[in-house]
Image (cartoon, rainbow, N blue to C red; front, side):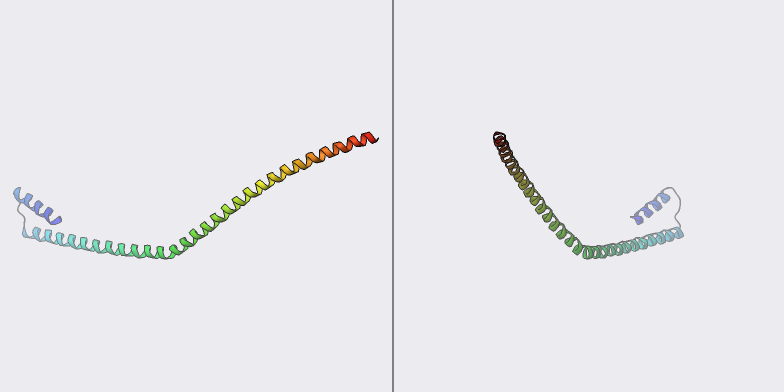
Length: 125
């Protein structure tokens, strides 16, 4: 701690033969008290900042929480719609292919009938 460091510095000065005067000790005590007061003030300010941050976080959670839930619900609904549209698109694609096959069969039958009519027409002429 700061107090221990000051005492060690005083002890060094005494060991080196330098006397520590009463005014220096009083000055050291004042410095120590000022440091302790500063530390207490800093701790109070940090607590105050923590409280303000917690209030701010609660406010953000309160206001954005409902909106986030609405967005999540809307996103889920949109995802279901997209999946349904994708499934509908696949069904339409399959039906279109089926109709193309049927049209091909009808064309083939029509071509055969046209060919028969042409043969009959050639015989009649």
